[in-house]
Image (cartoon, rainbow, N blue to C red):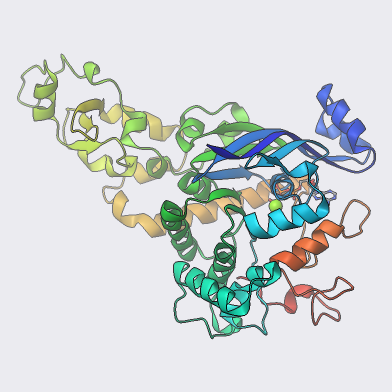
Length: 448
Ligand SMILES: Nc1ncnc2c1ncn2[C@@H]1O[C@H](COP(=O)(O)OP(=O)(O)OP(=O)(O)O)[C@@H](O)[C@H]1O
Ligand SMILES: [Mg+2]
């Protein structure tokens, strides 16, 4: 059942945003609006997320991912459209009601999860509960459990600077888990981590999700991460969602040339499964087995095949079996019934649609090179994404105190986000605690 629903969400920054929405509806482009100094950050975004699902939003820098995410917890009010969580329209709530929903039902985890340096790991993890006004004993108990879930048992009394970057990011995750929020909004939460630690965190999130069944929106510009985590993936370009689908949908049926070029570097061999690429087993019938006999029935095919794999076997594990003989690999379903076949030429044609997989295909030990391969792939992808981002000028450093609005002023929402989500301790003047000058990042312990 859909717990989170976004319908025709627009977010425009600048003057007369409603007029801009009307112009967009009439077909104006983002560039035309930009000429007038108006930024259409999110244009007509619609999607829904079910309980237990991880919905990934991916796109280049400046495509509108973070803005979209901020409309989902009411930090930004959409210029048009609606966001509903459990049927409740967030846009119709008063500020007070919204704060309540936000502190009880929604948690955010950022890229650089800045911890409070002068609070213990436990106190950091309990921060969201403190904001909710949960009594000390109760919040310590829940924060301890959350730290345990995040793999930080035994670190409760440590100080943040005694933890590695990856562990600090886990504290951020624990803080989000401790509040029992059902909706988890994660903005590039793992992007600052080393590839191996990052993969670890992805595994942990997938593992946690099996039991916790949160509703998660996860933002990333890393394709392999998107493919690994996303039950469904939305690809954003210039403020618009250009395709929504499963990893397989997007890899095998890209909606347009943009998506096709975007996914070029994805390691298909890890995302796709035998079930996704298999052909009808009927295609094998009538072909010749190694012994020269013609294969006429499913039974004969199963007897002649060099290997039998399952529907969900990753393609990376098919190279060896597929190259073992002339007969295709047989794919069976959970009941052991023949479901399809993977001829070696099918395997190669699917992989050759993407650049990097071809290199992997030549390696007999592809399945065992796991972490290193993916690490390299991620680094490549990130390098590419940031190169691509440069021409659009979208990437800008985000100060600890939150983003400035179009006029350079910090919005109330940003200040609140900063305070409530713990990017930094905030003093009444909106400055991070202990910040008297210099780069704010120097004053808090960033999550990496
Ligand atoms: N408060 C704001 N005022 C004015 N423009 C903004 C504001 N926030 C975002 N924008 C603009 O909206 C567009 C989308 O920004 P957003 O931060 O959502 O992109 P993103 O996809 O998250 O990028 P990144 O990957 O760099 O984080 C950009 O052009 C950005 O400059
Ligand atoms: Mg962003």
